[in-house]
Length: 354
Image (tube, rainbow, N blue to C red; front, side, top):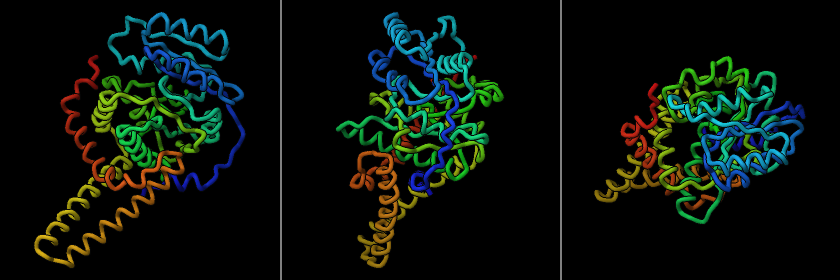
């Protein structure tokens, strides 16, 4: 069910070579060296006409000076700032809204200042999906590779979650998007009255907006290697906060895609519980037939999952998880369940008082 990415990559997209002008929008706050490291690859995209709008979220004066210096070299770069008086709305939502208002073009592309395109073809690959019927294009993003257990863990988690929501979109059941690699029309944003329906929530504006607007016929998916966005490694606390915020916000999702993903997770947990219970029971009470059936079911399940996940990981240029998939596949639902249990405690952190 979640091999949609692999199937899409095998099916070549018909390129129209029709490159409409694009506005790339980023909201940033005190990201230091990332402003040059990650912004320059965006500014140097191989694309006919595009602008980059950076909305400064109350960063320091040096940060503003760096942007001004870059503007003197890149004439398609513009920046503005969120006023200090803005207190009763999420600064991220306000920043995105300001960037959209300042944009000159209908097609908008979103990412973060701590993210970097994998190639200078990022915008072209996204635009291959810009058709008259398309309003939204969902892209793939994952963390930069590092030699650590934590990096393997969060990269695998990101891969699995992306396989789910992107495969659902490929199957015609989109239910969320990721603002680190996302495109949609300015006219769609205006028609939806922006973030009016989600002002109570501080986080995950991209997920909620796409959940409210994405449909089978107006949503495209781009997963070529050239279109991948790489995310700077977060701290463990930052990653856990993002997971908890997502667990809280995902309760608001609508659509069948969300329920299919939830059902798959539940059945996977039940399968492992029943299988492990059967293995233990068969071994303790010498019920060899039960033991053999449970063992064969477990092996068959693992073979199928390893094949699907490994194929997609290779397609996307990720590190090979062949030997870690059995372990991660069992514990990933458990750590996600932990975040869901913590979401009530952190609910107020995601709720915006207005």
